[in-house]
Length: 296
Image: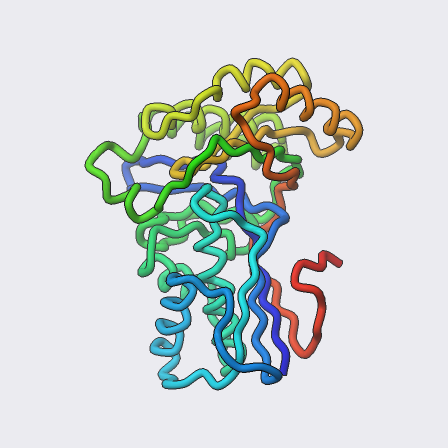
């Protein structure tokens, strides 16, 4: 038996804040992944942090199973503590893999509930783009199709512990009026399939979040990249990354040249990767042995 489960990470969130019905985020899944391989060809647990191990144990309890007799290995392209949903992807891939190996299927609602019980979660394992309450795991809205965009993912440095961040006494959410504005622009952009409006919404949320988790150079970076063709920026609202949002059709040569300019202008920002906004979800491959991060 060989099962490979792959779940995407994120470039922060498109929007995050609180409205009258509670806190929410809108996911920003990108094409970098966590993969869990389950096999009867080896034994033991490999590459699993505490949250993935919690997900494994909780899944066994949920399914009424006592043992997991196969080997499990987790590999990740996602750095930890940056706001790229590394823990959420670890938890989801582990939970789905354990269930699949034991002959069960978990719904998105199952995964959301179990993930939120471990820590505030990001629904990158849900199909499409979703609006959700990250504290409870409640799904609030689903956006199956968004305009395609590119993202240059920059790191401002350091790490942020999700649990500690949400436990702190300071306010964890920006001005609700700005977030309501961002959500209205986002939903208008979804209806019109307008990438510029989606980026505008993300930018409003990113700038509003400066009062919660300040990111040096964010405003200067926005002023620098917009004349170069960027549509806007987004951030990890409880992490360290900034995404520069580009039109999907930008040429590779122009993007490479422009990102070099950004790196020269802002040497404190580290380029982590180039990425594309994709649909979230869980990719399940059974009885195959592909490379963990194979894209075809």
